[in-house]
Image (cartoon, rainbow over all chains, first blue to last red; front, side, top):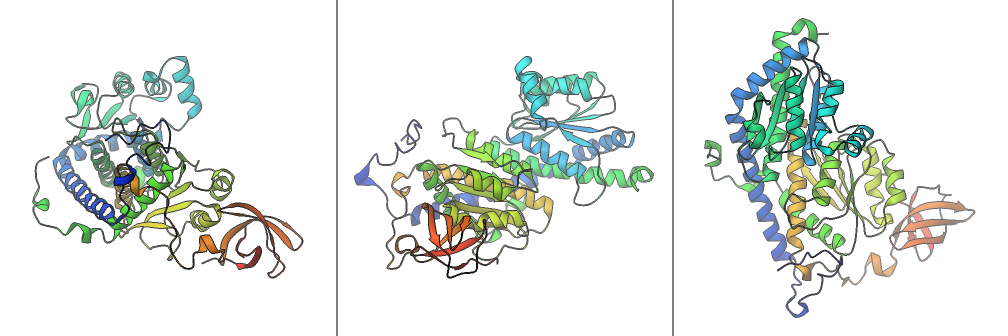
Length: 227
Length: 242
C-alpha cells in the first residue's frame, strides 16, 4: 500500500472507507512495543560501540588534548542531522556542563558563508573552503557522517590533512569512504546499517570523546587549563 | 553488531523507560492526525538549538527514501520564543520543544497551546514539568545532561518513525469526534483565550477557533498576552500561572 503519494495532503485519508479502522488501541499498543524494541536496540548498540571504540577514543582524545594545549582549536562539521551533531559537539566544548571550555566552532553556523560558497562554487566545498580560511597547523577537524561517504566531508578532511590539522571522523555502516581515507587519521565507526541507530550511538561516541578529552586535559596539561 | 553481555539479560524493556513508550505512541498518533490535515510542526529548543534543528530535518528530509516530507520548522534560538510562535503558528499546527522543566519561555509557549489551537509536545529530562504543562510530556528519568541529550535523539527519532507508521492507518487519522456529554470544544465551557488587544470593558482574544471580541467587565482589566477563560462571549477569569 502506498498511502503517502503526497500530492494532496489529505488524498490518502479515505481510500478504503468500508475497511477503515476506528479503534486506535491496537495501533497504540503496536507503536509502544516497537518503540520499546528500538530503544533496547539503541541501548545495546551504544554499549557495544563504546566497548569497541574505547582504545581509539583514548588515543584520539590524547592527540586532541596535545593540539588544544598547544593553542589549537576545533572545527566541527556535518550534513543534515549530522550537522546538528557537529553543533552539539562545538557547544559542549565551548559551554561544558563541567570541566574546562575549549575553543570549538561548527562550520554550519554562518549561513552567509555557507550560501556564498554553495552559490559561487558548489556545496562540495562548503567545509574545505572554510578550513582554507580558518584552519592552521595544530588545529583539529572533526566531521560527522552516518554513511562516511559525503563528498564535502572528504574534501574537508583532505584539505585539513594537507594543512597538518588533526583529522577525526565519526562514521557508520563499515566506515564508508571516510573509513578508507588516509586523510582521516582517527575514524570512529558505529557498526550498524540503520541511520537513526548510528546517529544515536554517535551522540554517545561524541560525549565519550569529550569526556576522555577532559580527562586528558586535566592530567597532562594542568598548568595551562587549571585557570 | 556482535552481542555483548549486557544484551543477553532479558531486560523488561518497557519498565526500563517507564511509561515513555506509551506516551510516544499517543504523541505520534496526534502528530500524524495534525500532519494529515496540513498542520505544520514548530520545533524549539532554546538551550540546545541543535535539537530543534535535528527534529525539523528528520521530518522535512526523511532518511528513508519514499517517506513523505512533512512541514517542520526550527524556531531560531535567538528569537523570543513566545512572540515568534504567536506570530507564526496557526490552529492545527504543532509545537515540539526539547527543554528542561524550568525553561520559562517553553512553559509559557506550551500553556498557550489551547488558545492558539496547537498540539504541544514537551521532551525533557530530570524533574518533570507540572501536570498538564503540555498535551504530551515525553520525559526521561536521567539527571545526567549528556545521557539525557543522547536519549532526546532517540525520542525524536522514534517520534518520527512512529508518526510514519500511523500514516499506514488512514482510518485512525481522522480528527477525534467528540462524544462526551459535556465537551469543552463543543459547549463553550470555559475555552482558553489569549488577549490580543484591550478596549475598555472589551478585549479582542485569540482562541483555537480564531479571533473574537469578548466582554471583560467581570474580571480585572487584562493585558495583551494574558490567558483567559472565555464562556459565552465573556471572560470568566484568568488562567493562573502554575
